[in-house]
Image 1 (cartoon, helix red, strand yellow):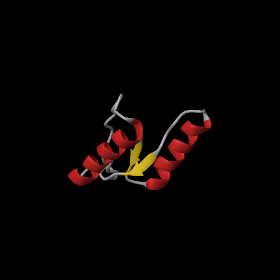
Image 2: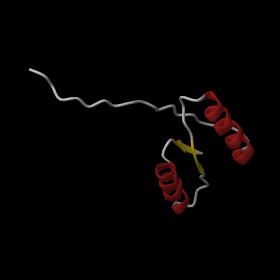
Image 3: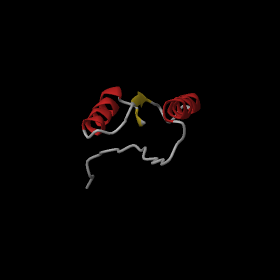
Length: 68
């Protein structure tokens, strides 16, 4: 399961994985919302039976110009 706040990004990643002959799905998830994460876990277990690997990689990048 590919989880991304941007559905088009997750869909594209899942499409690439499927093009390699593997099984992949995607869903939009907002990791700042507990209910969204709980739904992700439920949907993943429903679709795949279990979670084998979990990569938690969420963050915010702020770009500000350097000040003198």
